[in-house]
Amino acid sequence: MRRVATIERIGSSTRLEGSKLSDQDVEKMLSNVEIRSFETRDEQEVAGYARVMETIFASWSVLPLTENHVRQLHRDLLRYSTKDERHGGEYKKVDNDVEAFDANGKSAGVVFQTASPFDTPRLTKVEREKKILGQLPELSLRIYELSKERGQVKVEDIIRATGAARGTVKDHLNHLIRDGYLVQHGKGKGTWYSLP
Image: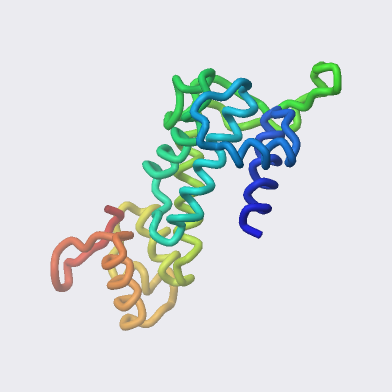
């Protein structure tokens, strides 16, 4: 089942990038994936994709979703691609929209526009932040957002803005500090909190 899913994912994803290999071609090629030299760019992409899929299947439970790990997976994805070796593991430097082509190789138009090279690093960080913050309880998220908007907050500011009880606010602050979302400054009445 996992092998079939891998073949279908690799086939679909690389076809989205313009590969002409069928799922059967992908399966045949993966049976000989130890080959280190590939004749076509399609084969190079499939080999890189297979390598990354194996890494993810083998390590998903211990592989943290960090920018460095994503960039390393991108580097591994392009490992066999001679055309792309210059930017493996790096953010893109030129625009690259995904385009559809007809049977004659003529462009049928842009399927979707990707982020510009200028926006890619920023949007990558924003999406990651959204994913991580989406896992926080509602009050913790509101406290985090207040800290981000104001630069620093005190317990009283949070109580006024949220209407939550002092003890509840302090519990959420302790979790946010423990998990690295906020930093505590000072002790006692003058204590304030900010993003790290």
